[in-house]
Length: 138
Image (tube, helix red, strand yellow):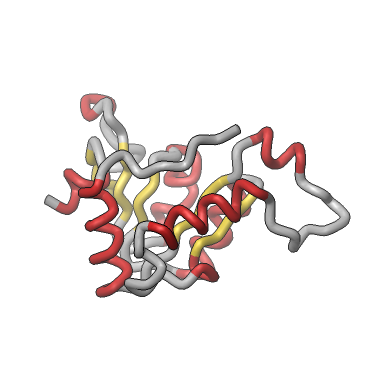
């Protein structure tokens, strides 16, 4: 079972502000145990996990600030995530998944890699590295 929670109220406030002022999308790569339990005969049927994530954003008032639930997206592969991002063509893309960032950064205007180990450096000089989403916006 997956625990659904935001780290703190600061991240909730930031997400509300971003949802209100920008075209915000959330793209979540499903955990492998969730993927394994999916009913492959009903690909559009949402898992309990997906519903829990959407509920988390709803309960914290982020959906009401401008993030309708159809902008909370889920995928089962990194390639799927990359394809979704390329379709959306965001002005800013933030992720911690190095594999996805390596594939996407040549196609996007601004990419931020979240990496708590700042000394590790980014995947490319054009990719900004931050130790957290909050610190990037401060």
